[in-house]
Length: 402
Image 1 (cartoon, rainbow, N blue to C red):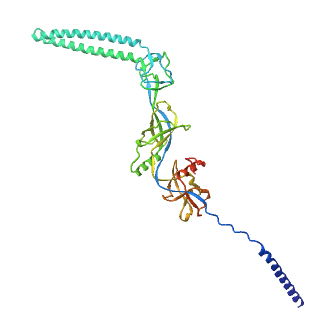
Image 2 (image 1 turned 90 degrees about the horizontal axis):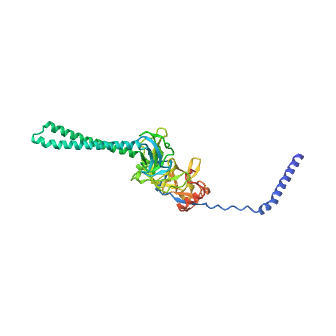
Image 3 (image 1 turned 135 degrees about the horizontal axis):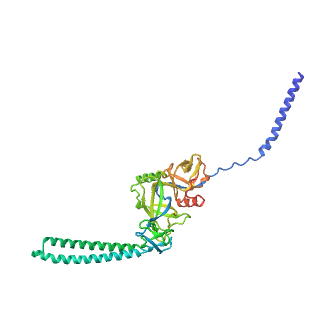
């Protein structure tokens, strides 16, 4: 019994001590100042543009090779000994410029022989005509027979034919003699190799040189069958289809220098190459200074193709997310949402949005890194041209996918 009384007394003292300690610390706790509550952050300011469909120019670039307008093989029309070459190999030549000289001695003799045969034929013709003129009046008076008249007429006709034959032989001999001087059939650049002086030349067989005509110049390039189908589908959506006459062609050399002359589409093949799956096309360019040389690598840029009703956003507006490319659209109550999009071709103004964005929607183009999906923003309209310039200056290179 005494133990129970002592235990109750100890518990009472412990309880009283706890109450005393708590009451003594209460003023200290109440006197301690509380931490201030952080004020709410304002929505981040972002630059926006309003997406508007428009007809957008679509420049298309292909790799190409320069080719001569035509390659002319220079072959001799007569054979003989090559006496002289009148030009420097590989140098440009003009049309009708003398290139080679073949030994003319045998052809001069042939011309002299043909001229002598012509004189002989002309003498025979005069004799035959005098004989016919003498017999014809005698036959009318009955002094000469009809047989003699017909024989004189036949001799006269044969003599006339002999003169024509001799004249043809003279003309042929003169042509052959003229062919011993070989001239350039066209202006252009000659080949670096030709037969040496003193070589025996065979008519129609020996290749003397090749002349590549450079003005105008051809540029060959190719495009895929898929690109061809896309162009046809684009034309079907247009009220006025794009024709070859509506296209201009620009050239850039391998180091980026631009060729000053513009060209046009000359022709395109109507078949697909089974080995490469591409369609061959050809453009033609003025080349008065010879700056375009056969075999040069160039970049072919087609100007005149446009995309009707296309929506374009600056490059910096497109970000890469887990689901692919996306943009931020400011909706109701100025809340930004990430919208996945499908990108089309790249144009100088930015990316063409094929799907995922509608006309009239507000797109964030400046301050994208400050945007959080589902959070409000403070949209400020910006000039689309200024947004494009800002994106290019920040290091986003045209043609690079985000």
